[in-house]
Image (cartoon, rainbow, N blue to C red):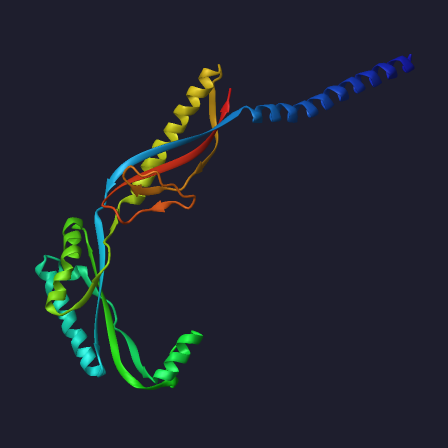
Length: 256
């Protein structure tokens, strides 16, 4: 009698253990199967923007055998540059001059110069017979929210040459100062686009879109209008007044 009860108990325990083991094994399998029920899509958003800040740089110099004369000449050139910008309507607080840089010019023996030219060695002061002069240089920078005016000033800055200023103008750089605020809205729009794409794909195959499992933001591409440029590191065009910004997100959704 006791032997029969023991057998029944043993069978019950064995059956229970088998059920528990089955559940333990089945649980990861179920999780694995559900994990495979997902879809990853790429959403994007585009928006055209107009730059609201222009930064322009110009360089001017003066050369003379005497350092004091060269400095006086550069100072006079800087005054002419500033006067020109003010007359063009650029505010004084939008104009910034850099520190003066100096280059020493050496007069070197012709034979030594020929040897150095053949060997590619630089001309050092100790190889020169004497200092032949100095070149002093300075850079001016204009930073203004009047982008149109700044562009015109940069193009017409060659007028300074007629005033005896050795002036070189560089291309204007255009920026959009509200970019950080815009990025948030564009990421939201790109996410909505990703969801719409995923819903169309899943619905067409008879499924139902579930929750977001993961989302990854791509790099922003700021390019010229109608440009197809793309870079893994992102593009930030500063040469164009009007630009196009593209935001990309990769979103993984579960499928019910």
